[in-house]
Length: 190
Image 1 (spheres, rainbow, N blue to C red):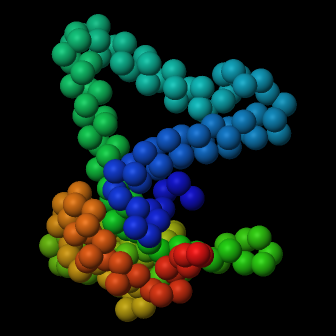
Image 2: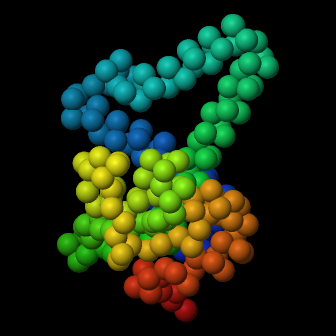
């Protein structure tokens, strides 16, 4: 899964993995859907074609109304938003993994597959985003009803502090690696 940060993977490496990996995965899914529907790659019924066109049209409109500086500001704003989202994904899932079963399927998502942060201010400001495990465990539950599972791994700090620490990989690894459940740490073969 390109959206899950591996054990000892830096935030910067994860950004590249997640952004490019999820984009490629989206195109693969679209390609499969096109084959099922017997559509061409460039079909106007393809969501990915529309998403791509919308980006270019949006960029063109920004350029026409605000010029080159407006386009650059829009571009850097988008990159900032994407990297903030991916940083949150990084701290929410760092080092936690589901095991591959003999059947070829992965374990069901459970409350121990994402990090929580039960700090009051973060819970209020981020609309219970910090109770991420319950969101995965019961994805249809409304955000204000999300619970804190005692069995979920806990971040040592709130989301904002954790995000800043993630920018310093040696410090992040020192604070987080010993908190990862032993059964989720990959075995290094020699």
